Image (tube, rainbow, N blue to C red; front, side, top):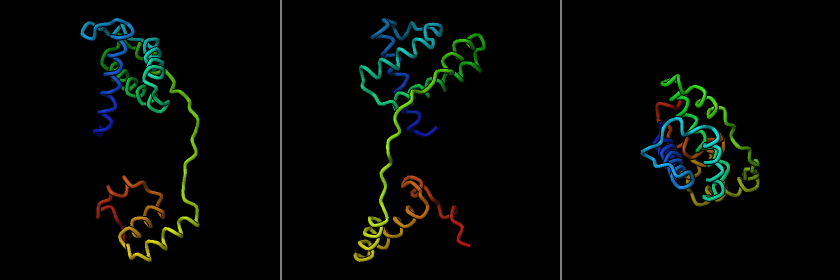
Length: 151
């Protein structure tokens, strides 16, 4: 997993332990597998929304981390299959789809002309590749010479 995924999963479980301690009075070193079920996870998600004012996207990321863990547990401990299945079956919360902002053709033309005028060929090349491919900046910077087909 990527560094950011590990960091996100760590945060999800740290907050879960905080919730169990602060809201449910469970000492983290005394928590048993049977203490956590789908109802507890739902309460945890609601707690984060209310007390930490997190977005639906962040809430769903935390739920994904927990579900991933319980998929692992279900494979390693068949006796936990019912609890794991009920947690894995929790649905992500639906949010509103926000409009993605983009440049229109006039704005793109202005940007290209600006880059040409100031002879910013490197920036013009980068912008052109991003525009023509629809790639993200992170995808562009991870390209290696061996990834290119110039034939």
